Length: 110
Image (cartoon, rainbow, N blue to C red; front, side):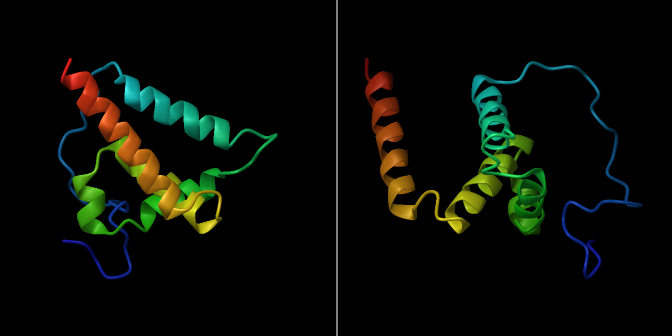
């Protein structure tokens, strides 16, 4: 059980079970998320800083944090920071998500 004042990411001193140390290949979408975070954090742009990404992850809340995978947390945090900064709007995000879903449905129908 989580103590008051501790975020879901703060597991210090708690039993979390064994750590899976087996090497595994990242999926293509995970590689793309990693690349996007790297590009947004590049010193020439600094659109997204590491501390902003971490803050966003820490603010997800226990239910979302536990439900999401490592890179899903990155996507959620990155999205929230870009929305906060006005770099993207929720309308733009919704349109792009609809485009991707339509493209995936079309590809699945082939």
